[in-house]
Length: 260
Image (cartoon, rainbow, N blue to C red; front, side, top):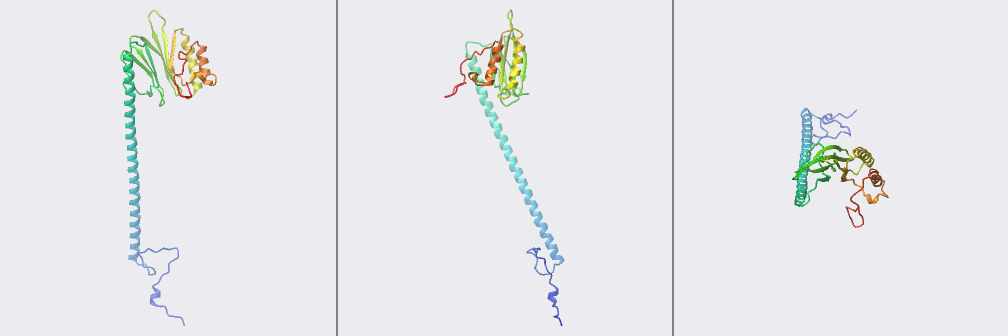
């Protein structure tokens, strides 16, 4: 004769070990419809709070990023204004020195103008009594320009700008004399082979005119190392093959243990 089941035992239900009941529920009691609704509402509230919290974090990060980008932009604008002011100060100093000289130059060559492709000069480059011609650079450095006395008649022979060099060649028309050819070149530190190929073609074409030719520029090479540097040797040999000779034969940059 078995034991009679108690009424309380009939109300018990068994929960698997993997199930973790909510603290809001009564452990070991039958779920009622009300308890189910409470659990669903609890889960919904938890999800909503999590979603709001996640959205707030994303919005906060986006706001911080926007502030950071704004700060960087403002810093760049300040640096650009400072750079422009500094360069304008140098330009003003240069023009004042030129204007105070008793001697008037027919041509003044400028390298590393940093005038970019597609842009007019950002600063006032006017020099009283001169016209200004320039070739921009596609890079952050480079660019060339020529100040030409405004009483000289001239024509532009070539304006060439690549990532390897920038070059400007003009022909000055002189009455009752042979016209003069003048060029200014800036060579970037890259692609020496590309520059030498262009320079050879340019000299071959221009010297065939049989006019006095003058070359100005910054070729970024140390001619004092022509015995040890392949580029310096090739550059100097190329000049000499067209009967050009450097007029500056002393170091222009001097350090304690280095001269270039």
